[in-house]
Image (cartoon, rainbow, N blue to C red; front, side):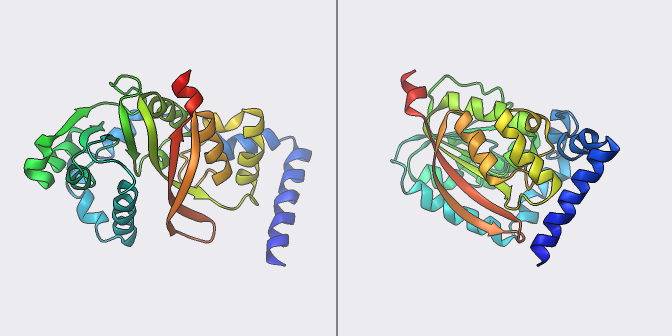
Length: 260
């Protein structure tokens, strides 16, 4: 069977690298990526990239599915709640928040994205409390927000950076957080196998490449749990391929974290 053949090939490669004494180097090459580059991430959404952000994405079917799912999830949130949208981007969900009378906070690292959101939202922009800042250094007090929405972001950063971001989201959240993530559903490759094994020992994944499409779902859920959240629900957005899928993960802050 094709599936078994790929597993045998993978095992053969591991044995080959072990005999050659290059297994550790191969593992590092598969899992360890470049150091976190915050400037790269910020520069990705400046200038023309920011101006054309919505124009390029509004043609995507998944964009509209995401809008619909967020609208559905907001039905479960009480009116006049406080919400933090990070990264705020073009403020694509702001209208939904405001219709529910929510107090809206938006944080983004890109000034140009805020300029786009100001143009797109019109008068509604002034009803949002927007600030420039980093998701791993949130300028808010503990337990500030009834809801946090983090969409199309965690997949663009490394495991190590994501752990810092999730720790900050956990700190400022009162209860619910909605996370968007692209996960890998197949562990039968060398990099996926390593990603599956080593989180048990808390080793390599802290240095792994960008998470989107690289992290196995069970390890993403483990990271969520380690960050002080309880997994509540998964809302599927799309399946990019047989191995890659996209979803919103709804999590709640651990009650032990709140009381502690």
